[in-house]
Image (tube, rainbow, N blue to C red; front, side, top):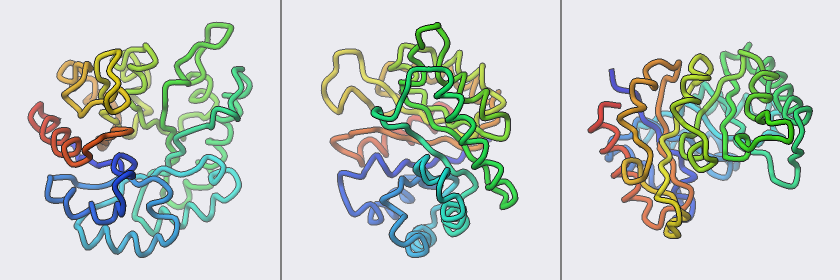
Length: 252
């Protein structure tokens, strides 16, 4: 069975207004979008109306970690308005990070506390990785492992294969390691090392990640949808079209 595929709207943020992209994404074959905060925060109800008009769903949305900690009820209400089932904090700003196990365990604890508040509403909290969680601490352990262990099984994982590859880690290993925690798989692709264009990212299928070899591992996870993302495409439409076409061609 084919996975539903969502488009992370962060990918087209530099070509506003992003709500005008929704009908085009539907025409390309996307089932849903995954918004990041500026797209929905001003008027979640209006954003939901535009989604409905375009015939698109919202499976999950990115949100500030600080919002989960200090304003959980606000973001729970946003999730309900958008019809989302996953609330996804994706980032810790560099100036706030500490390279200690205790720091990353605290982040995991914050996620667990937010998940406990979301669960009665039928919602799950999921963490989204970048590369910094895969950079070993002085003792050789990794932030991602401390974070997810401290968060516990109630917190899911949106795994970003592109950032894992850029960190020098192996997406196949990480898909297998956290198979039972993965709620969504981001198929971000990395251009060959040294590529300057588009910040070194590529459309899914145009980069160096061997996606056909990963598909069997996708099936072993608990993921219920796929998300395409590119951090800085010079042509968002080409990225969006190429990525979903490629994924469907290889049987995702």
